[in-house]
Amino acid sequence: MSTKHEEVKDYYGKELQSSEDLKTNACCTLEAPPKYIQAALKKVHDEVQMKYYGCGLCIPSQLEGLRILDLGSGSGRDCYIAAQLVGQEGEVVGVDMTDEQLSVANQYIDHHAEVFGYKYANTKFVKGNIEKLDELDLEPGSFDVIISNCVINLATDKDKVLKDVYNLLKPGGEMYFSDVYSDRRISTELQADPVLWGECLSGALYWNDFLKTARKAGFTDPRSVKNNPITIENDALQEKCGNIQFFSVTYRLFKIDGLEEDCEDYGQAVAYKGSIENNNLAFDLDDHHNFPTNKVMTVCGNTYKMLHDTRFADHFDFYGTWDTHYGIFEGCGGAMPFDEGGEASCC
Image (cartoon, rainbow, N blue to C red):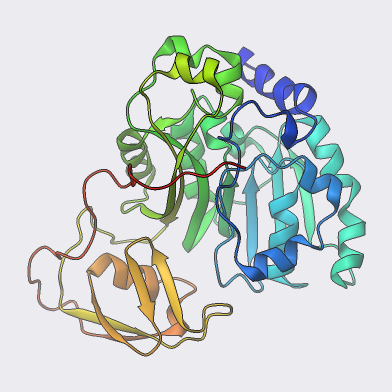
């Protein structure tokens, strides 16, 4: 295992004993979770929550009965939330390489099954490096959703992580994950700083490099769901980082054949039925696609496929064909996908 991996294991296994030991607010969720996630959190053991180091909300909608993989699952917090949402017939698998974190996660498997009212546990944890998912006992094409919370920035080979994720997903599956991104490439000098790396800052990908990496892995049209600017709140570390701006961003990446690099117009439209649990009034696909219930809305071909070729298909009515192309669709995207002027909050 590389020196960088050993440093990460030591940082999250020995130096950090709880979220109170973090030196910045990068590994900190900056927004309140929705009420149904808050309700699920109340059933997660306190020790599991104490060792949570995530930066976002990486639990998507419509999970009943699905098979979920959590990359860098740590103490198991997000796994135990997802375990409640997939139900008794679903399954959640967590992968982590830090023994101390895995020990906490495994300690409470039976406890949570009992608290959730399940006849048997639907959660398990596997020791492994997320850069070597192809070496673990994980069947290709077997997961509906893959999640991760502020972990991929800690990987040295991010291309390999996303390539393996793509192979593990079922057709129509998605990766839904939160992580830290930067507005420029980070120097090798800063990347060598073990504290900045452990705090999820110097391993952050420049956002445009991430988009290229995702597309290279097969995720043709990455969609930003949420983004918040990160304030480091540590003068010494802020001085090291200089003018680099960091963002906590949640992305969804779909494994769908036929997605195009640009949003193209085929004269198509969709109408949301209001039938996704906890999304009765509207459904947010990403940060620029909000679908109010029963409203017919025009969409690009990629958005059409993200709804039609995935687990969301039964919850929409679809209009139009692929017979005529009308050029570029003007309603999607922009330049940098993050809001530089947004308000940041501390833990």
